Image: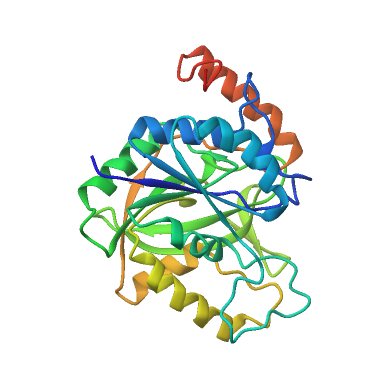
Length: 302
């Protein structure tokens, strides 16, 4: 078994939730969704966690989740700042936040020198996804251009309370990703699931589409390419205060350039997560059901 790191992207401010949702208790002993992700990763053989956080929550984060998980796994911290950009670039003054998940991942480069998984802090992916990704990283550690994505079924990943962002994917018959497009306003309506573009244009979906939930398996060679791609992004779109440097877009660009292959590890799991305040109770109910099925101990860290 080789060394593997779990990178958890936890710098989002949770504007739709109304606070720092990554630090919202959902378990019976005060556990956060992050706790369950780290627990599942440790069981699958990951031996280090890098938390990507904002300076605003540093002290509280380290005193809670960092302190309790640090007793069970090596822990390091990285920070995503709006001003973490090349020296030649000046962010536009109206830009108030960092540059998206690709920028967040780039902020972790000094902490990751081994194959790694990257996940969102506020998404519960299910225990079955971690062993599959861990096995992939062990088996393909020497192939710098082969990465992986945990693929979910769209209808298993939406909320009833508003829109979500998902990467809509196409995979070939051999199980490799062909394309991925980030859709930032996927929602459930009485007529079904679909997404909105240009504020008003509605495109219906079946619900059976393959989607990315930002659960990736990467090799550390990605960082050198990511660095150059971020510079290219800033030259192209850096003056746009709303432009985002998303991981799915990075992956799609790498595939189109022939610089990466991505194996899809399909999961039948039911996503749960806290995007809106109304999501909290369903998440807590799902956690209680998993505890009743002995999937987790009632006090996760004892």
